[in-house]
Length: 278
Ligand SMILES: Nc1nc2ncc(COP(=O)(O)OP(=O)(O)O)nc2c(=O)[nH]1
Image (tube, rainbow, N blue to C red; front, top):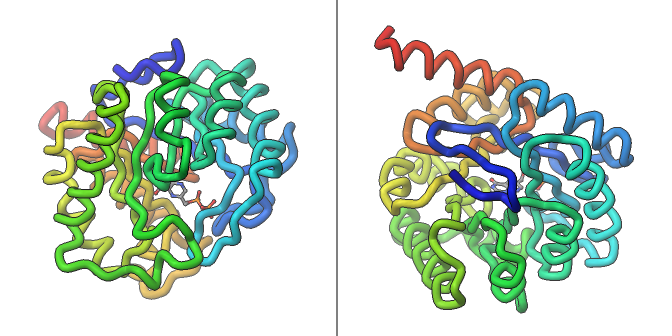
């Protein structure tokens, strides 16, 4: 059980994290939920469809994305976190690397920090320590989405991503952020080629053996399109659901997805059929 600021996230079985991008330029749904009411309505619909947590992001981190000024990220994210903390019964996570946004989001009622940069920006570790919420630590090859794909070079991607995550856990523990607050994420698509992503996906059981809950985010990403013969983004639903299902079977505990209903149904089928040995 993850204590998300007083709201529990039961990780005894795989859970779905609904993506709420309040950005104009996210790779698959930019601009769709930029208004406050649209954002709240979409979050409510995802909770209704079975999302166990809603992830609010104000900065696109797709390859090549331009950085967002902190003031702009705050303006996009904090009103939505405040509204959702009142409107929905499940935890709200904030997808940010900025310490100021982490602190403001915690004050606004966020229950988890989702940092694609693994608390590597100056002040991020201290902010995470101070606010006391659970943190998802994700691997990204550089700190900048504009360069991460150029830096997609590994001797052994699984070993190197695993070592990175272990190092970030140690950095957290050194500041008193206990393992019980940590979630790990190999960062699919963040400075990885297709082959790297496939190697990491196949190594999920190994990464799960690090002993901390795994978050997997492959929804609608390039690796899905590539495996479906360069399928465009709006044709990646079925592939995304299949990948989420296989990630859950491999040990992932949080599946970060755009399409909550189909993913929840797939996980329920997995649970029902496998639990009953069907
Ligand atoms: N922990 C975690 N967080 C993430 N945040 C954003 C994206 C990118 O997807 P999306 O938010 O849909 O796109 P964008 O970054 O363009 O907003 N992927 C992950 C992920 O794989 N893991």
